[in-house]
Image 1 (tube, rainbow, N blue to C red):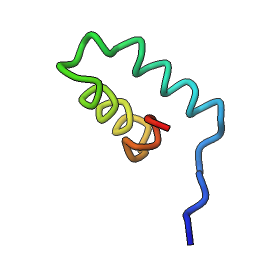
Image 2 (cartoon, rainbow, N blue to C red; image 1 turned 90 degrees about the horizontal axis):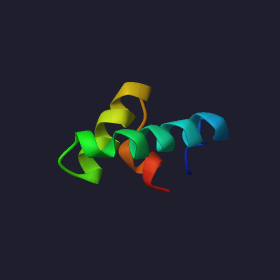
Image 3 (cartoon, helix red, strand yellow; image 1 turned 30 degrees about the vertical axis):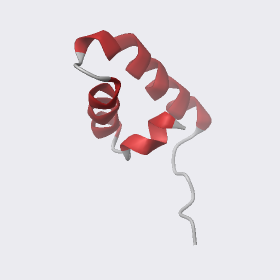
Length: 49
């Protein structure tokens, strides 16, 4: 059974925006995604959908 997404669409959209806004501060897109995901307590793949 797939776990239901606990994040609202607004939270996910904001997190994706944070990745885009801060991408240049990291050596790769994945590094930016991992950092933002850690800050909002989600798995990185959530921000790549």
